[in-house]
Length: 131
Image 1 (cartoon, rainbow, N blue to C red):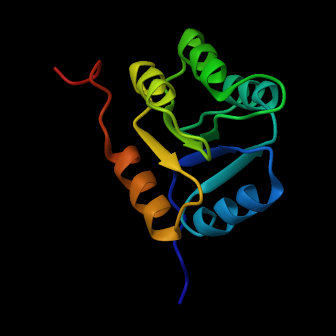
Image 2 (image 1 turned 90 degrees about the vertical axis):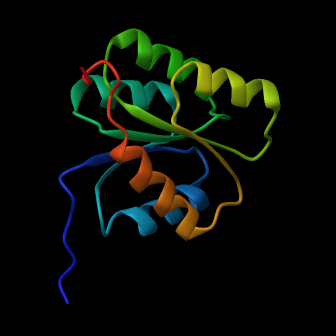
Image 3 (image 1 turned 135 degrees about the vertical axis):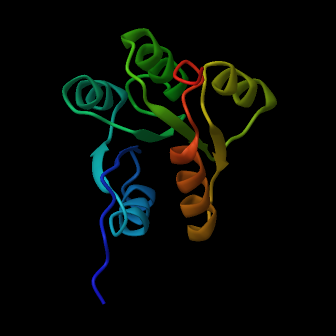
């Protein structure tokens, strides 16, 4: 049985190899995947390549995922974002949602939860385009 690959591209931004590889394994059968271990590397990919969805960790080695989200928004790129964290707080959840993240995923995550969140996030229409 051949699996079909979506024409959508996901950027996984995760500095820890285990979660990064797990996400790649879950999503690579369905989507094109780019990965980055730092916020700086992720921003470079976003500027150079069309990315539909960024799945990013809050705790990154160079600067926080929240700062990365701010920079992506400032760049004008239309990228949907799911934020992942192992140390959730109401404040960080409110901040990323205020900055336009479509979901907030707590680690450890289960595979079905990730697939469902990604699928739903990619279905969300940009409100700027709806008229």
